[in-house]
Length: 310
Image (tube, rainbow, N blue to C red):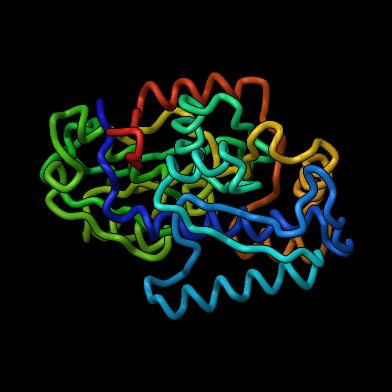
């Protein structure tokens, strides 16, 4: 099945990418600039595959980026710039050419990019309780739907919580049934939090909601009675999580190790804990043994529509 560009992709990736980029700098907190040495740039160039802003407003985006640049400068003594690329393909190309030192990808985007650029490497994975992300579609117990196909023509809630894989899963499932996401469902709502999305299912405002495992488990703990009125009709295979990546031989190994160590230790620092909490991450981890397998399975199940597709 071919995946078309999600119309809501800009908002769905905002928190995950902000979290990755902010916590990225923790690896060098409190240090001075390294100075100009081979492989150790004086200006750190960081790219992302989409907008960093928490709002569609251009002025607010500019303010957010300036705040982040100042944060990196004050904490690391590095001059830096943040470059929001057109898409994952442009980000990968600029990393391969050495124009960007580090990149922040959605996990599935990294899987696509690695197909064309095998020298792209994960520096650290952005984790929220579980290493891999997923998607679960829930309905009310009295729903007639028994699988994803049974939801055709109904309304579904897709919360805007920085979980881009949720939309990717819905896109892929809709296309497997010969439809686009917008034509498969009668209505698509985008509440700002998971609790509202699931409450709307229980209350009959929509017939289904797509959420991740962590959010679903949190809802079960908070509202066990309402959770008991739900059941699952579909779930995804594991998705790779958002991650910070580098291109082989663009930065020296000592620099990369320093960044990696900082990311992995972020949860042990007070500043890091605050940022992780803000962006709904529990920490950074190294890729597990089956990471390449998950990348391959993701690309197979959800291939991009084109080299520049999302």
